[in-house]
Structures are given as C-alpha cells and as structure tokens.
Image 1 (cartoon, rainbow, N blue to C red):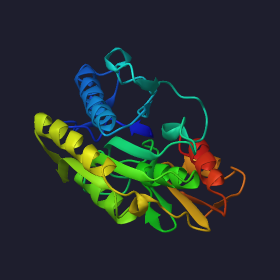
Image 2: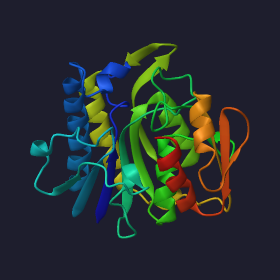
Image 3: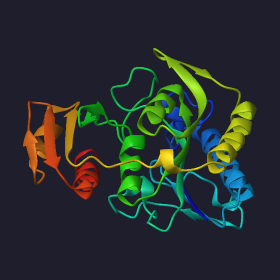
Image 4: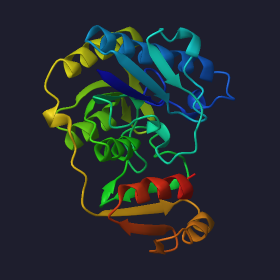
Amino acid sequence: MKRFISADIEGCAGLAIPAEAHKQEAVYKAFAQEMTREVLAVCEAARETGATEIVVKDGHGDASNIDPLQMPDYVRLIRGKSGHPYNMMWGLDESFDGVLYVGYHAPAGNPEFSISHTSTGNSLYIRLNGEYMSEFMLNTYTAASLGVPVLFLSGDEAICKLAEGQVPGIETVVTKRGTGGATICEPRGAVLERIGAGVKNALGREFAACRVKLPEQFSYEVTFKDWKKAYQMSFYPGMEKVDTFTNRLVTGRWMDVVTAHCFVVY
C-alpha cells in the first residue's frame, strides 16, 4: 500500500504568527522541528497500519523544512520545488492508495485563523466555484483528478471543518483554534498522540467516503491585494478581468486551474 503525505507548517502545533513560518527568522527552526515531528508521527502510524511505501512532499516555502536526517529508512522525502503545477502534491500519481495532509491551515479570506492564506500572501482571497479556495481544496482536487482518496488532515480548527465538509469520510486532528488575532494552541504532546491515533483510524476503514468527484466546470477567481498585480495577471491566457482587483478563469480542465494558480498567485 502506497501513501502520499503532503506537509505544510502553518497548521502545526504552536505556530501562531507569520515570523514562525519564515526561514530567515530566529524562531523558525523550532517550528520546522515540530513540522518534522508531526510528519514522523504520520509516517509511523501509516507504517504500523500496513503501508509498504511512503512518500512525503515538503510543501512549505522553498520545500526544505523537514529534517531529512530524521526520516526513517522506509520514507522517501521530496524536497525543493520541481516547477510542476502540482506543487505541494508533486510526486503523487495514480499508483497511490491514499493522501494524508499534515500542518494545513485555513484559506485566504477565512477569519478563523490569524495567518490564514492560500499559497502566498498576494491574494485577499481566491474563489473556486464560488467558495473560498484553500490549499486543501486545491490539492484534494488534484488527488481526485488522479483517482486517489484523501484520508487524513491535521491543522487548525477552521481547515478541519472545511475538510470535513468537502470530504465526508476524512479523519481530522485539530492542532489550534483562532479567535481574531489570537491562537489557542493544543499541547504539542497531545497533538502528536492524536495525529498517530487519527492516522490509524483513517487507514483502518473503507475509503469510499474519502473519494472526491471533480466538478465538470471550474470558475477560478483571484482577488489580489495589489491592483497592479491584478492588472499584470489579467494577461494570463484565458484569464478575464472582473474588476480592478479580480481576475477569473473558466475551464473544464483541472490542469488549467492548477497551472494558472502556479503562475498568477506566486
């Protein structure tokens, strides 16, 4: 059984302010270590429940946050950015039996986590078919396009709720809760225990309710913070200008969406 793990940092235990996720800041190292610990907890639980192959994609920033020296011999870690539109999901293909997410967070436009965003800080929000698009939604549709079920997610309470709404059979573990600019963080030890138990629960049942059906049509709409960025990106092929800050792409192909996202948001 092959498992694919996509890991981010903002949803990991304890992290509450932007500086803690930025590599140039002194506080970053401690949270990169926490990201590594939470990934390890998922890997160990997946191994214990029968995974024969585990691939981890480091999905934060320049994708060199997880300590490769702490990864077990049975794990392959993908570091760095290939440039492929799958981005945080690069390395996933139809041969995998399930996807698990670690350290995920609320999307841009969601007020329930103080550092909510989608991929970068360039957008006020991104809407996909009228809903705020999270990195979870983006990556889950990529998994769906390959026929791979989405089984587990850990992160802030807001993204856990959104994940449960999109994938009814998913197992989630809440690491923190946001209120305004504050974050109520769950104890790190308890988070690690819950992640291990949650992964075992997720992998110990049928996956039918964890399969997502792709919509037939996609309306991908980005509202930028900077009108100059919006103007520039309105020239992306197929993108139409909606207003001074907003552009829209309408397509029936998922690959068009992920490709546009990689070009216009970064």
